[in-house]
Image (cartoon, rainbow, N blue to C red; front, top):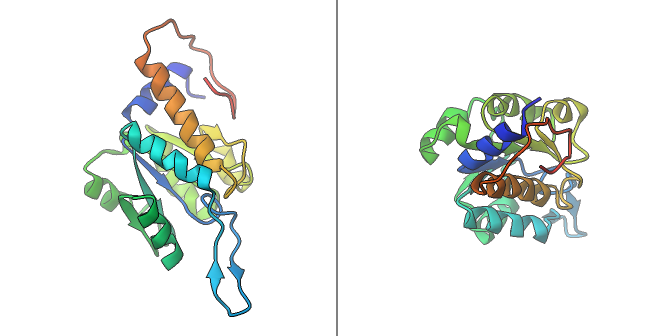
Length: 188
């Protein structure tokens, strides 16, 4: 368990939030039209989460194993600064991501939902913050700092963003804070 004061301190340091796409920003489904066109469902509230984080000094990076023009278009629309497509081994890409952003691992947050996110999340969890959608696989849910109240594609990213923003606001507000440990899904 990480204490509430440590969660606030970590949130205050966050400069970049890495997010998986399929199953986190989308519902994990791939839809095909009668003409064979692929589509994905993105939630507009998650987009507002991106904007709110950016306004508070936190950039966003999409990190996905898929190479999808739909993801590129979503990143462009949201003005996401970093978009890494076709990343099969996300943990191995971490040094590159950190170097391009000019930050260290303690300034990262990560949200993901499946086994291919587990290794990078484990690395980030030591000094940064991690979260997972409500419907993430059990092995991912087990090791995160925050379990979202919403599933992937239905506001999970926004839920995680608001949790981080709340922690950051508390870190800036001088007042007596308790040091109790938070349970999964608690908002400090």
